[in-house]
Length: 474
Ligand code: BES
Ligand code: ZN
Ligand code: ZN
Image 1 (tube, rainbow, N blue to C red):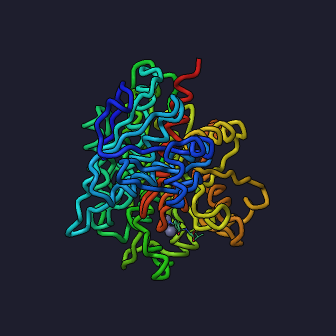
Image 2: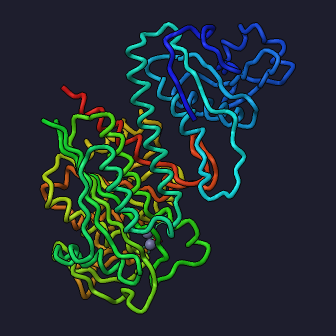
């Protein structure tokens, strides 16, 4: 799907059809009111009416807020993809919510067809936006930034949607390497011999039964004189069968999504480098496959993590935290950063707590959680914070090692998983770290907002909003 911003009145743009957004007030005043009423149109969210004769697609919305615009444009593009029209035009509404139009078109118009042997090619391929007498320079900047962000989100979605036979840890490393080359940042890959040298035994144990060897991916974007240094850690389980604590058959389906955290980190690096943000960003991805086999790690094993903390394995399906323990410890030691964020499809419990659409955010700093909540709201992503407490922390006690990889009680599983990670956060990082559990938000089997079936790219828009905000601080 192409999208173009024109410094012209809408009447001067030639397109097959015009998208007209109508809230209640604009509807009542509209010249086509009678025809629209006969057609049963209402000025409510996502209501659509296509009038072929006047070459107009009317879309209802409660207000011209970013949220409503994004979902209205998603509905419009989905409708237009079913027609024979090739292009549409629309008026920009304001400088601020031009991003929502771009997201509706680029994110709402996304579909993943890589594995279909024959796809009906859509004729509809272009949306033209009229500047509508708004300050073009300002509009253009917001338009360009939103386009880079939306394309990076779709890049992340494509990776998440790719199957485990086509995206194993080695291929993940190759993709990161190619992206770094294309976008002029650096990429360092650690193979299993390197991981052994780094004593990353928890991460290595998880991947041991797989024929696909584990890799640690370190990508860095380093502008001159950066304002801040940010480290991003991603869970990159290219498949999670559960290991010997095998998942039931129905829960295993979709577990290609378990690499979403890593894919999000790559999407953020892609956009940040294209936006030329004034921030040094390091991405660390633990790319591993959790399988069964004669050499599999077992419940009862005790692993000595990179930091020296010993871990009693009581469930091999709680593998993400083992990989993250080592990658977080590596990231903190290798780079001195101002912020440390990890993204992981870590627990089913997070979905129980917050529902499928919301990312769970956990950490010690209320101030940082507050800033992230604002960035989430401005970006259109949903987050909910979950609180730590010392009573839940006690549930991770092990009789035989320093810590158990699962809590002794099943309640508050998203929080106990984050408290496990906390054991690997150094004191000087406690207030700089937040954990994002994207188990529910990274993937969807029902379309919602501007998300269609599959990977959503959760975390990309949110983190880019945060990074842009801190890069613009005085
Ligand atoms: N990758 C899963 C979490 C997950 C579940 C993500 C569903 C997305 C959808 C993770 O590795 C896992 O299996 N966690 C266990 C932890 C449990 C054994 C303590 C879980 O959530 O059941
Ligand atoms: Zn698991
Ligand atoms: Zn997992």
